[in-house]
Length: 183
Ligand code: NI
Image (cartoon, rainbow, N blue to C red; front, top):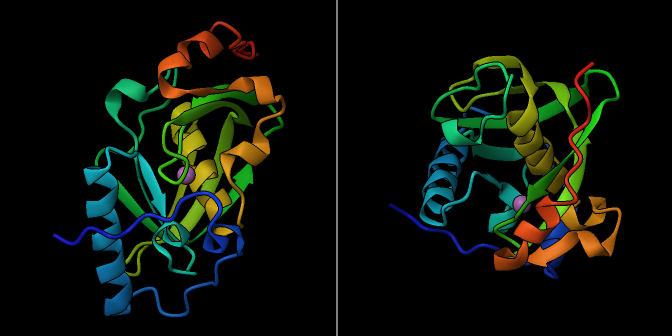
């Protein structure tokens, strides 16, 4: 198992757009994905993007824990997903506020608006094309990770600085949480 160092907010690697991967099935990419997965799980994260481990490449790993799935959310993929060159398309313009953290911003959380529904595409390390519809937490984690590939941190999406709190104070933010009504 290889654990990679995680870049923290302030390091320029987190602010640069990452480069497309020319050869998704390259063994170097497979190794990177394995190491990113080990690093994410060791840090108890739900997602990690390559710039967070100092690699300027459009690669993400994520998982959707069953207990994080929101009511009415279609079944999210089990286990871990690794995606190369992911692309997101919002479905509708319905936004939802939700609490997010980031392994590059340890100790802090914020309320972040995200598209409630998206479709995303990408390639897995074995070269398989993936296209999935996602909602709720699943859609949120993919949007958070793809933002990293464009040099965007969740802080940038928080609309009010009062919506940022330390982990152990974040329950106060949840009282401000206004789930968008289901149409
Ligand atoms: Ni993050």
